[in-house]
Length: 138
Image (cartoon, rainbow, N blue to C red; front, top):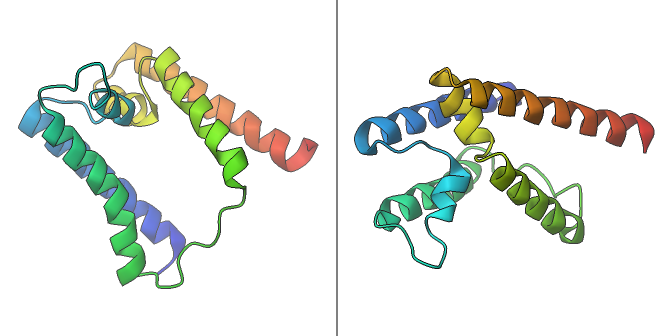
């Protein structure tokens, strides 16, 4: 199967998951917010729902990889020494933006939130600038 087909299927599944989470629990499928509710000082009362959603996010690609793409997607392009600080910076950015790409880009835009429109535009412009620098400057 072509990679764009996997992307389309994955995007559709993310959309369905976001709609189901909102309609069944009233929660926005913002990953940073779901994870934050699992952390101390006191986990949220709906920690089982949050943990289940996060577990699904982690397990679904593994199952798909095992069933549909036995050769996998390849090795990471960067070392863990580079990816861990990058992940921490993304987490800090999520806190500063009061949400992550999934919360703002998928759920916030669907609700026509002006704050989410600005946040998503910032995410996208930053991503484009990063690719430009990484591919053509460095």
